[in-house]
Image (cartoon, rainbow, N blue to C red; front, side, top):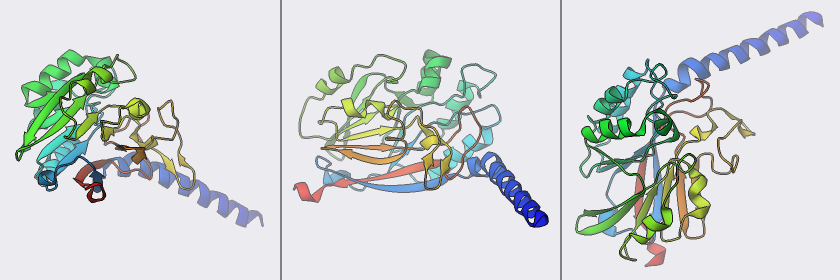
Length: 281
């Protein structure tokens, strides 16, 4: 009996050790492409074929240059029409914890997108040096939105982008930005680093894109994420959400924060396939 108990105990600790090693060394380096289908009432049928690549939370550490290059290559493989991101390019709050912003921006500037690369900044970007990060990104052709409203005219139809400063560390002007949308018939997409803004989003904004949570990083089967950095707990941890006429997609992101581990939660690049909601026509 003691021998059997000893074997079971040994097997348990070996299994735990393997899972920890997997979560530290394997899963964080496996980058997956996920296709997400979303229907919007105001989406123009002329835009149904747009390939929108959505990513965020790179948290690029000094050792992550090769991973960053793989991200750029994977995005380019998708031949995107538009690239959208919700920030957190740097990792930590000091130069010792992150790859230099100029290096990050230079690599991301190699992404080829027909109609542009648009982003907001995350809480780590603001804690590090938002002016420097914005300067480096825009020097490499990436448009940074900080409480900005931007019209995009594509195939003769208009799409609005709103990008707000990080809701958790800055003062946003979401009501003002929404009022800057000068028409009612065109779709509006909101970029927000954190999903916590969602309950306050006006219904004129049909789709909110967010991140920040990393999906909890570690997801336990039948339990869910261990911890989600949100005042709503696990409610908006990852994936698709719908409340009334509003929709939101939260990416689990690419990098890691605090602990360099992911489990049951692969780093992801999202392909958004947005189509006209035929039921509304």
